[in-house]
Length: 314
Image 1 (cartoon, rainbow, N blue to C red):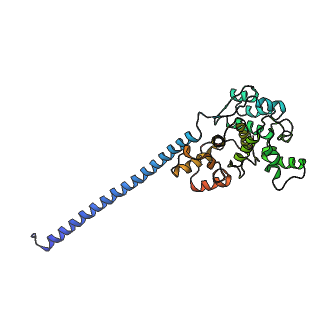
Image 2 (cartoon, helix red, strand yellow):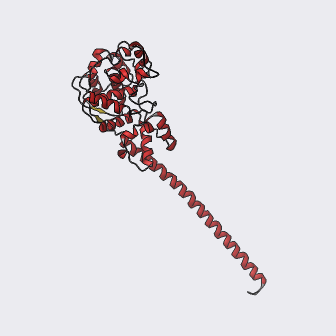
């Protein structure tokens, strides 16, 4: 057989074909392997970035060192016990089942010289209940003339107005008083505001929503709303301005609804906006902090589930 014979050409062609096929399969195998490896790597990186992202957000939204509330609590806990707004035995029994009150919480309850309050995730439930009791009992026009007594039309008499106000979770749900919660509803003039301070509370309270319902603080029909109203009154009495009120309110709401505000922070982060750059007033508004607004946020971003906050009850 010579180099120019047909048999030689056929053999050469078959060999080249096998060589090409082998090279192709090796290329495809390597390519597939690389693609699979890249996909796994991308998923791993995405998971790591997501984990780091949530951790970073948590440091911003729920700082472990807590926040200082710019109010003078003084002896309000003691006054609420003396007037029966808080039944000390009932209150302490609730927390005995939860591990007991810490020394700082006990001081807020019975002490006389309390200054500013350090709020953390751990004491957020205790503070919620203390502010709830105060907001419920401190005399204020919002409770006497606002939506708590005017919803569905104005009342024809003070008795009817009280009956309407007593139908909500923020009133009927407060079971740690001596007697009925309505025996203390807007009855005790512990913190009396000037007309300017009252106007500020009314303005800000209409702009602060809570994700457990669709109402603003101006309509405090649940414990979170009543507690926030009490906090706003205390801040106004200390001369705190509107901007700082919103800043503090956002920090407090974040401890009360941690997963909600971590999710909202994640939403802003995905828009390229850091949590420390957002407008507290905007975030606390209907579009983000109401139940309806937060559902829209959840539709746009995967929700964060890290910590459970105090619920709509004691």
